[in-house]
Length: 133
Length: 133
DNA sequence: GCGTGATTACTCGGATACAAGATGTCCGAGTTTGAGCGG
DNA sequence: CCGCTCAAACTCGGACATCTTGTATCCGAGTAATCACGC
Image 1 (cartoon, chains in turn cyan, yellow, purple, blue):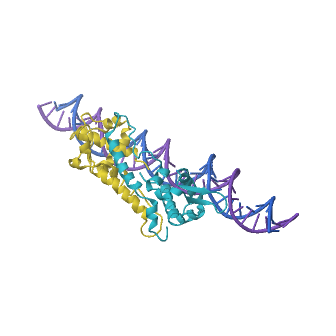
Image 2 (cartoon, helix red, strand yellow):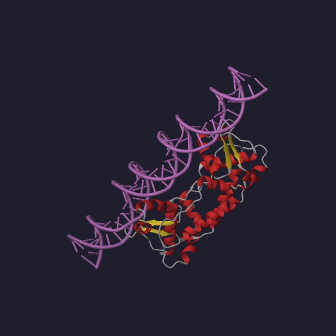
Image 3 (cartoon, protein in one colour):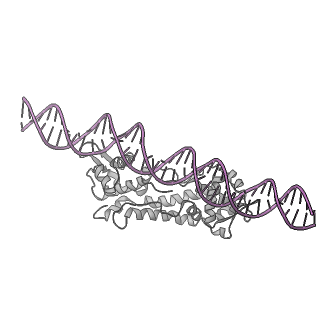
């Protein structure tokens, strides 16, 4: 039960993009060396964000990643779901009746956390930071 | 990012002990076959609960596990912490200043969930269940 | 009947095997920019 | 000055290699209850 490093990388990348360059493309190389990750691995993570519609990529020279139009609305939860998936954190795959009381409690707890995360916008966080990262 | 099966087993076992036998010892064999787990594996999980002071074990014939005195106060969070550990779910081990804004948000989210789980007592849940499991 | 020892039914703990997922690397392919070069 | 070509700088995606962690098994050791047996 841990958030993956990939999620950490994704959050930091989104944070950096939001705080620094609103419309310019940023190469994966630059993003990677700031976080001390291999560029190829970070690129794997970022393609997930691309498929989730949060950022867009440009090939070729001076290419890189850039936030999409709607980036102001992107919450922590959106990013986490894009990386970790949207499946429930707790599976009572054991068969004892239609609904498991324990499962219900755990799902409610998870929803509690998700409610908080969905109110945390990346744009809010980046607003009051002069020098990002 | 998933709760482990071990946590699931631990929660169900505590639930069963709470709902069925308040003071009798229950053998790990019986507990295991209800959840379709190997007894030896379940025993490993339960020793964690013993060390956490939630249940106590009795060796020998007619031995097994039993709730301790204070079991009424045991919350979901207590059990989860006993199995998964109490470490934070999110580590920004990356070095960028003393405090990471992203880390703070994630920790707050986690605390949100933990607050809910610490209010969910196993005794409450077991109270209104006639036939446990 | 009563102690005493053996048997049985358990838990405990360490060592080990196994599987799955997270993490990270390599490489070939496609794409855009920009520079160089010839007309 | 214009257009063409070519090299450089990128991203993309799949296929691996590696590492960690969760899951599970096996086995020997210890412990308590119970049963059998002999006195």
